[in-house]
Image (cartoon, rainbow, N blue to C red):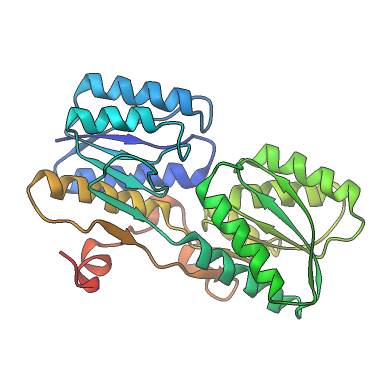
Length: 299
């Protein structure tokens, strides 16, 4: 069995982990993966072209992280028309049919993370947000949760926001602009970890300090927590999501029933528990099918 696996870029370590997770599941189940990754990060036209390329190669199934909520829908319709089973991963489809969606709930994870930060601040402070791409469904949900969590704390003030495009260097540059404009920033809510790493670089260059949280629990974030540069991250486990998505695809091809949706729980990672994540992706374990799916009572 051949699985075509589509991720958004090679610049975000979370997608490196996703590719590793898909590879692990495929190897364990006697399948093989072919990876399709845009050279230009998150480019819808390039991902659409890669889907066309994969269709020509006739894979048995596809695992797709769509780079945009609508801009690749025409390509998704072609996958459906070709009769190739499709499993959506991390980002939901807005059009077309998929065997299953494997992901997490972005709003509650971001709300919980923001509340964790606000409690650390004693419910008082000036906070800025580093957002992902404006069209990103994960960023939209996370930023909304950040803002609504702040509204629940009368002493918390969202005083600015910038767009880091879910990438390190754009986040560093955007954060540098906010630091130049705002003499006081007590804390930073970053919608993903790689942008948090960029924000740390901007803080260091400006000789400033702020409490900082992110999302993904990438190894760089764990190192930053150990150094004291970040206080927490949320374990949005892209590696396990892609691993389970690939397993969904193989099980479906074997004629087995799979859930229409698999939602992974999220955990806050801070200095008190980060040792469990303090290892490279190659040494981290993927969530097991039985632990995630069977315990939910679905088949």
